[in-house]
Length: 377
Image 1 (cartoon, helix red, strand yellow):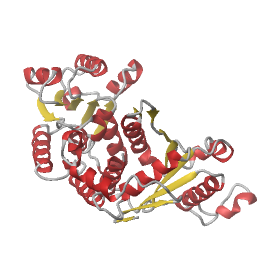
Image 2 (spheres, one colour; image 1 turned 180 degrees about the vertical axis):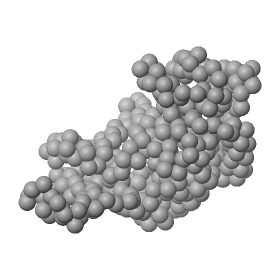
Image 3 (tube, one colour; image 1 turned 135 degrees about the horizontal axis):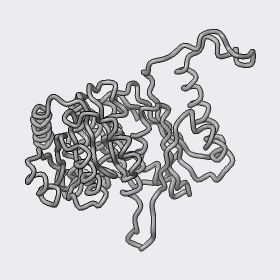
Image 4 (cartoon, one colour; image 1 turned 135 degrees about the vertical axis):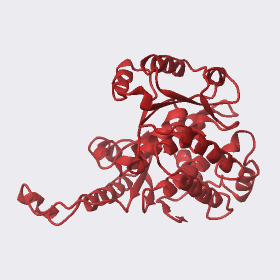
């Protein structure tokens, strides 16, 4: 399936017809309703409302040097994924506290030497989560001069506390669950505050979402059909393996999206759901490949590659004659060759695979990636 800047290839036959025309029409009919409001985040009027509000708050907080995000689960994973993928364009540092480990907290706070230059972004729909409450208390004690922003629902403890303290407030939109909130102010505001342009994220998501409305050549429909078919054949473990360090956090975001959305008790009282995993190429070839090659054939392994990356020449001085074949090669060509070989090896061993190719790693392609997987879910 050709998807403008992203290309998806599914390497196995499917026999499931879950994404028939009727199913796609039904999904389209629910866009913007109830818990499907996330599909309107990149459309008017919600897009302009959020962008205007974000721009105003960003302007009011200048100058700032560091951004500290307090969140957990979907309130933090999206921000971490966007920042890791796009931070080469950032002008400020973003730190995320998404656990209550005291050592991590203290080490993070040490990096924020002048609290007056720090903006703390507290993300919680209600503010009633114990971890967020504890992190906020500890942070206010450690950074008394920082400026604070709340991203929260229309009501709840955090909204009340932010109002009492005169903080800037941005919305967690109604009907948008945490794992679907990355392209709402939850994920967009910290990224905009650190200097990364956010409109291309929404442009990419909108382009992908349009493709995911089609009755034919629907990439999310094709992906869902393939993965459900694989589950019915006993391939219940679904792995995302990027060959790009900057996509590690995005694969972690995928795990939460998959696990929280699809781990359910169905209408027949049966506990169902695929088990999502992440791996990193080429690193995890040296830990997981043995299992994939000789262990159970119960896995769908997805390979994600970015083709337009910087490259580094290896030169012509190998440490031994056995490695002389590396002369004249580059890190990029070696990484690609490892990815191709690993794909072939696991397919030969009976596992199922798909490949997602991103010609470049930019905000537009990341927006497409996010919308594809949210629609597939």
